[in-house]
Length: 318
Image (tube, rainbow, N blue to C red; front, side, top):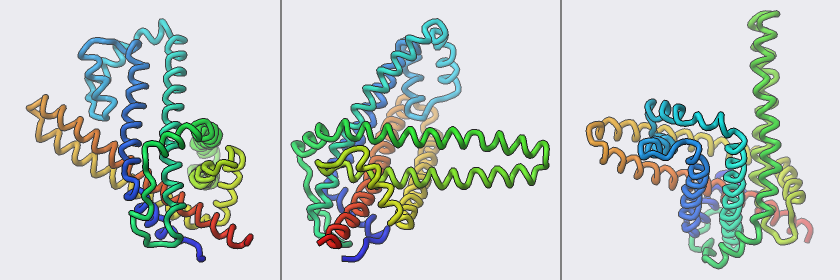
């Protein structure tokens, strides 16, 4: 059995999601639910009038205007008076949202893993061969994997945060050197510091994308999956980077198209507030669905890539 190339893994991922298309609806519904949890957490501190809540809703959908943002700032004076209450509410809201996210994401991951395991190895497999979806399987995998997924994401998000903090200091150090030693020296130092950090950022993203696949086997755990993700990244670095580049390009193109459509719809319905709001809600739901579809195709592609390496290791051991 030969290794899967990046595009072959992507093809298996597309077939897997097509065969278990319900996971897209679950991911989209989960995104809207998480947004609702965060908004409900903030509502007591951001005002409760109809206009304020309408502005908050528009801002949450990315369709807010400057007046909505100004009203949001004016109504947030309570943040100063009850800062620690806000911190506590945000902590509770984000904790609940994190557990909910890891619950349904664990179910999606378990379904996609089972689908790839069921389909015969190799590229160009029909979507029907990946079909494993059932509410019972999803619920069972969600319950089994929720805490494992939560621990895994906490570990890797901490690593992401550390790299981002280092990246914040790069322009500050470069500006200081540029002021004392010249612009060329500052730019050279900034690039010399930023490029390794960007590579580390991509490596963390790749290792976590591969490692999450290793969470699914019953005998695995957060530590074992993390170590497996790092090993798999070392073996499949070019394919992993290719999939990440495809993800970034597709996400950028999708964002540009959505922004263009949103601007055109806003212009066309400028004089009809009710129709404009209905169109914005429709566009928001479509955006959530398309984003969920793109993300799950990439998750399924990494499932295919990681599982192909598992099969190769098993064949070599036999």
